[in-house]
Structure formats: structure tokens, C-alpha cells
Image (cartoon, rainbow, N blue to C red; front, side):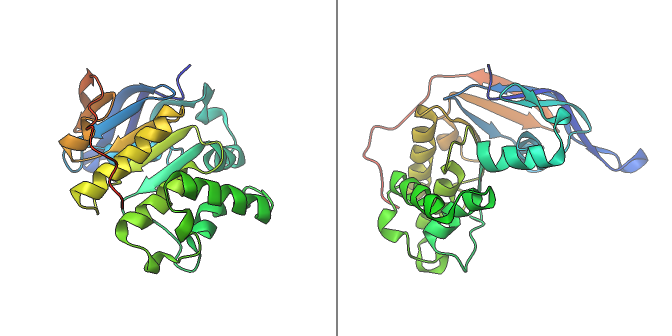
Length: 238
């Protein structure tokens, strides 16, 4: 069973002469352990696809399934719970809270879901250790480099039992070395069974994916299966 399935999903904005189709009849499935890269020109619908896949926005038509469950059949509170427990987001601008330490940022989704603070803290430390930042757990975002902040954002996206990772240009604010390091972390999550969608403008990083999906004017322009390309050099440090 697919972790994520979009079935004939469309999204429009405006009406009449101002009507714009951000997504037009999209079919897409992502399996556990699979990394799918989404590419396309600006305005092609890439970010809209992520927000709908993550239940942050409703499609105009079609259906989104996560773990076989139809989002349209869920109550608002159930969808919020699903987002907290099963879906991780990584954004280009990190979206870390400046008043919280690294471990507090990572543990926050668990605490919001009712996990006791001490247990959430332990889980946050374990997630930071996975991305090589356990020794930075007490630092605040402004005390971290750009690459370190992005790794904290990935640790937050993976904390707990997340099944789906959605990343919007996760390497866009980083240099090529750190961008590759971020992709290695995402690949590591996929090897552990997480399904991931990464929006990227970088064809080199997209080549690491199992599949590359091209969006143009809200429609799938190409759907290519490929063998994952992964450089053999040592993992760079952010």
C-alpha cells in the first residue's frame, strides 16, 4: 500500500477570467522507502502539490490518501493529529522558532501532541543524534550555521514515527556541499522506510531520487523511473 496517493487531484484559484489551475488532474503515488523528486518552472504547482499532499490545503477535486486513509473523510482534528504524528515538513527557510533551543524545536511537535516533556526531550535528542547534531542540542537557531539549522529542521521533520517527509527546496539556501549533505539525510530516512517528496530546482540533487516528476502548468509533464544516482564520496559535514 502506498504511503501517499493523489488520485485525480486538481486545485484552482479564482473564477471566471481569473481562474487559474495550480494542479490539474494529478495522479501520484509514493511508496515506503521511496524518494520522489518534483521539478518544474516557477508557478508550475510544485509547492501546491506539497501543501495538498500534507493536508495543509484542500484540493478542489480528487482525493488524497495517506496510509490508505482518505483525507476528505477525516475531521479537522483527525487531520491535525495525522500531520503531527505521521507527516514531517522541511522548508527552505527552516521555520525554526528563535526562542527555542535546537532540541526544543525538534521536540515541539511531540509536546503539541501531548507527549510528556521529558519523553519528548529524549526523542528530540535522539533525532538530533541521527543528523549529527546532538552536541548542538542546547544552541539557539541564531547560534547555528545555515546547514546546521537545516539539519535541525530535518530532525524535527523526522522525530517520532513519521511515515511521510515533504521537503520544499530543502537545499535552496545552502551551498552545493551542504545541499548534498541534506539529501544524504533524506536518503537515510528513506532507507529506514520513510516515503519522501522533495521539490528541487537542482537536477544534480534530483538525480539521487528513485523517480523524477516534472510539473508544468499544473500537470504532470513526465513521470520517469530511474535508478537512484548517489555519489560515493564521504558524507560532507554541515
